[in-house]
Image (cartoon, rainbow, N blue to C red):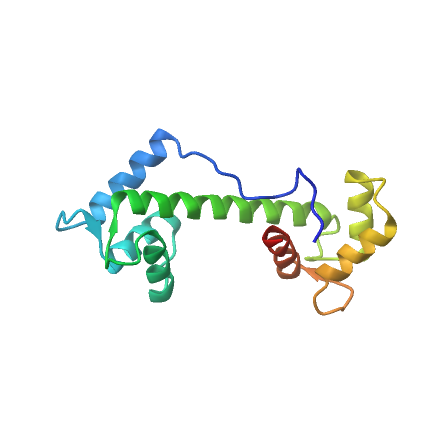
Length: 162
């Protein structure tokens, strides 16, 4: 996928002192026995408090083991690291949604080739029409002439991996 230098990309954004204090308070509230770490269940409760959803057992294990694979708990520093990464991912997700919405000027919930042409003519007017067509075809996963948000999101994330 082609992307501009100004495109949506995960950015490291530092947590404010207030956010960090909130995260520490939540860690302490969820560490009921003052063990100095959160068990998987404690961690899941903390994620609910911060992000409003309960992670699955697999997601919780994956997040916890990404910090320290040899333990059944997550320390305060590990927790802060995971929360920071999740915050950045959420910001990136919001950027993708914002870009999609900017392309979807007719509020249809999908993009057409004409939407792509219009958007690219504004942000990259010298980009060859053939390139715009290739980008559209790459994003249109099922070749139905429409790019859904899911298709668009996949294409944006696929471009990150390259």
